[in-house]
Length: 169
Image (cartoon, rainbow, N blue to C red):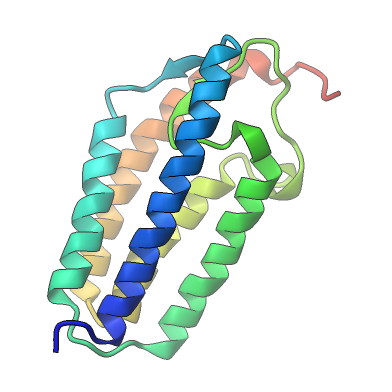
């Protein structure tokens, strides 16, 4: 059967990602209208393709069963994702948009970690593959994602440096 538990999980994650893209687009449009500047455009298509291939590969290769403990870990990571989105609020987007003179967000997980969203993403890609009993996909997509995130974090750190000393309001 094509539509088993594993593919249902992948479909739910795809719907979640599409909803996030709608929110990200809305926030990006608003931030750019307020004078925000986009950085790191070169790596953004790489991220989009990587995530699309990841979900497509999981849907195509999943054997049908779901490893409950790994799935529970993935669900816990989604709670972290929601915490990040709520903490960033109107500033959350899938792109690097910086608004000059705006203070950095220092609430939620940002009190302790500079890039909690990237930590969640770095973990969720291999964890979901492991939940679907695809260890090679976990390894391959996990390594590819860490490499792209390394590129992205370097870009983001560079552009946020000028805003680190702006006091929060």
